[in-house]
Length: 148
Length: 357
Image (cartoon, helix red, strand yellow):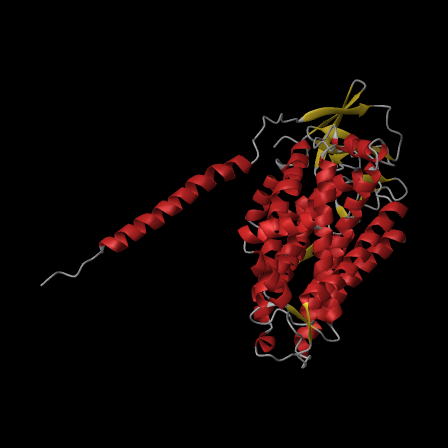
């Protein structure tokens, strides 16, 4: 009596063919997907920047400055303090602006509002704005990321 | 005339043109009180043709780099002869193609043309609509003006909200963690190569399916009246095309497309920023959504709901079970009406808010 065949030649060849097609697809798609993925550039990590001159900002005004690749905001509060935040809204990445009339930080995209501590007052932003440390060194206002 | 007849004979001898002519003459279009809605698909097709033609012309002068994109569009509009017209036609036809596709989609829904055996015609139609939205979104950034730049920031940020795949899709779209020069190149690549190829493929499938199965007749229509596709329906279609062409040209001449100001990535987002009108309903939803819903971030919930809505639209032929048995149900009708009212209402509200801040 012939033992029951575990794997026929036809089934074996069929699996081999299917496997081959899958391998070919994988070998074609993998380099394409890798090609599409952005190249990681050597982004310089900026931790501190001279955001403005000491006498540059009048009371109750603000300025957007470059903090590496992203915008930051330096505010001269009505109380005379200098405060700095990330100017990127925590909702959907728009750049915020300072509303001098209401003394709040405002995002024009979806009407998000932050107080002068970066905390959300109203609107859809889920988190406060990232705050930075502000120091005055000579004539310069130096803004730095808080050390972790 | 002799030359024409000779050419016709030449092709008839070598290729089976008779079969094609037979197909056109034997095809019929149902004739009833809703026949008007059949013309919207043809008008969408014409507008897609206009987009291809005007897009190819724009490619001659457009430069896809952050430094030159804005200037090259300004050059097209101010220096190139009839450049303003070509760009205006491209910009206005982009609005109209989405408007016509929306009407076509809505009429197909309410006439229940997705009933078996036309489920896949509906699916290809919805996919076609999504590709058109993608073309609108990617094309919006290309002039790299302030409005477009920030709308793209928001749009790609929304993509990133989707759990797990979102950040990868966002990275792929932006070409990095932020909207930069690389993003423009990627959007250009999507806009002129990837999405048009997808569009051609899906339009082709959609048309083949319609040719094979013919046009659907609404459930309420009991007569078998029909008109031949060629020349009766075709000539009526041509009238629709002439109207569309006229509308596109009139709007382009009297209200040419504007360019705005060059984008500055380090300037605050200006007030009044808004996406194109066909994304306004979503923009307004995001604006009104609370920051947290049931412990989840509001934007995540809003994006998830929109995704579910898109999926529901795609699966309508299978979700509308009564229609599969040749019956209508008020619930399906009401769901469609509520969905449409929401989109139109939110769009209207966003436009009203835009004018009365």
